[in-house]
Length: 151
Image (cartoon, rainbow, N blue to C red; front, side, top):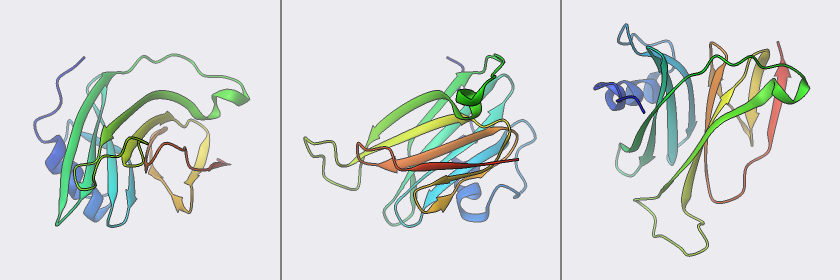
C-alpha cells in the first residue's frame, strides 16, 4: 500500500469547500468529491500510480476520519456490467455520533471506475467527478440508490 500524500487532508478540505476546480498541488490531482451537506464528505485524488482519498465528518468543521491510498491497475473494463465497476469499499465509525450495534452510524465509502458515464447520481445528489473515477459516501448499512447517465 502506498503512503498518502502529506497534503491530502488539507487539499481535500479545500475541494469540499470550493469544488474540484480550485488550484491544487501539481502531483495531487482531484478526481471526485461527494459532500452530504453538514454531515459527511469524501474526496478522491490521483497521485503518481495511486488513488488516494480522505473521508471527513462535520462537527464544528470538517475533520478527517481516514486517509487511504491504493495502487491503480489499468485493467480493461468492458461490457454493460463494467459501466460502474467497483474498485474499493471501506467503512469508518462515526466520531460525532454514538456507535450503535446495528451499525447505523457507520460511514461507507465506495471508489468507482466510471468510464463512459456522464453523470452519477446517488440518492438525491449528483457526484462531482472527472477523469473516469468517482467517490461516494453514505451513512448506515444500506447502499443508497445509484443512477447513471451515459456520455
